[in-house]
Every structure is written in C-alpha cells, then in structure tokens.
Image 1 (cartoon, rainbow, N blue to C red):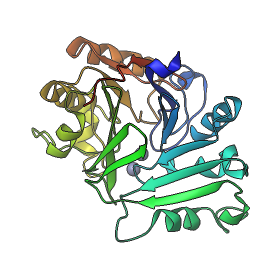
Image 2 (image 1 turned 180 degrees about the vertical axis):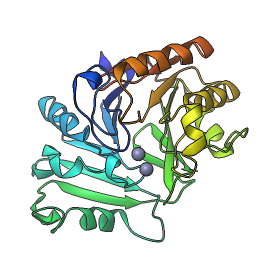
Image 3 (image 1 turned 120 degrees about the vertical axis):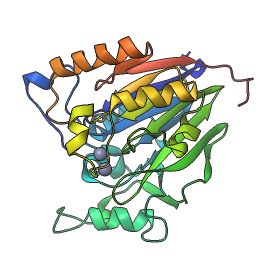
Image 4 (image 1 turned 135 degrees about the vertical axis):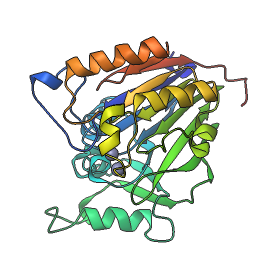
Length: 284
Ligand SMILES: [Zn+2]
Ligand SMILES: [Zn+2]
C-alpha cells in the first residue's frame, strides 16, 4: 500500500532552463518540479516544465485535490504552470502557496501577472480549476493537510526564496533550492530545516571551481550540501537543480564524487521515485 510510504518523485531536476538532447537523456531536461505523496495527500513543489508530466500523472491517477507550494517564481520554477492540464479541469481544486514575496505581492497576483498577454495568449480566467491562493511569511508552519506539517525558512537567493521541511509519518524531506552559501559557513536557516532529515533535496548547480566566478547568482555546490547534511545529521542528499550545461556523464562523475564523501548522496533524475516507509503512530 502506498499509504504506508512517504513518496518523493522528481518531475524536473534541471535548473535555470529546460534542456534536451542525447547528452541529457538519462538525468532529464525538465526544470524544477517535485511531487510528494503523504498517504492520500499530494503536494507539489514548484511549477517548472516538470509540472507538465506531473499533471498528466495526476490526471491518470485521478488526483483532483492537492497543494502546490512555490519556493520562488523565477522562470525555471513557474514556466510549467500554463501547461499544467489540471488547471483547466473544472473538477480539480488545488491550493497554491507562496511566501517569498510576502508584503510585496500575493500568490494570486504572482500567478495573474505571469499568465496573461502579452506573455501568454489568455488570462488566468480560462483556468477552470478551483484555485485557493494562500500567502505565508517565512518561518510560518503550514498544515496543508491532516497530519502533514510543512516548516518554512528563508534561503539566500536574489529576490528571495523559501526552503521547506515536510514532516509526515515520522519522516522528514526538505526542499532547499535555490540557495547560495557563504564560503566556510553553514547557513543556520538551512540547518534548521534539514535537521535529522531522511532526504535533503539541495541546490547543487555549481562545482566548487565554478562557484568562485558565479558568486551572487544564488546557487550552491554538492560539497556544501554534504557539509550541511553531516552537520544536521541528515541521511539522504539529492543533488538537484542541475546546471543546464551539465551532461549525463558529468552528473555521473559528480554523483560518484559526492557518494564517496557521503554515502546517502545521489544525483536526482527526472522520473525518479523514492519511497520511505512510514510509521503513522510516530509523531515528530
Ligand atoms: Zn532555479
Ligand atoms: Zn531562482
């Protein structure tokens, strides 16, 4: 029974812009989208181009009520929303959450601004699904569904970004993308979100060498992900938000290096699914 698992599925693992071609075939080219299933509850994180196949899968499994949480609204995290089939389905209802623009723009405004001419042929009012847009402030604890606790915190990224810690059934999965680390420093906000986590999905856009000349872009490295996971007692590390130039071969190599340093590390791939057995009696 899938109800006994905390399921994580990667629908888009590529950062910045979608890519295609034989050199990206194994890890995939869709931009950021993660699905989590906590028993009968479905949560999606970000709406990059990976949201499109996620939407088809939701329709195929008759999921018509779910949550979509945004880390932030850079294109690679929202571009899939107008291509998300459930948004046009009147039998679907879902809740959209964002907190990175708190005090500047609501979640509803963020969506309305993005899906409208001249950037898109039509306005949001063609979307027939019932949308419930919610706003929160970094640090808030969200309870989107019964038994599911989502803690939030700020990440270091131009324009702001939210990291999430999802707790259900005694398991913890954290989404930490996009974020930039300071040299020789561990981000306290990130450490709080990933403490004792079963899985940390972490922004590993750059290598340490690339990082030197990409300061200010708001991204991090797998080496920093390992340091954070070790300090926080986290067990799994998904290398994520792959640079659009990173080929399958390079990701294989990066994964190997990361695994040698931290046994729970792996490079996330489009379509990859992880299942964590849960204990529904255990609270955390
Ligand atoms: Zn991004
Ligand atoms: Zn970004």
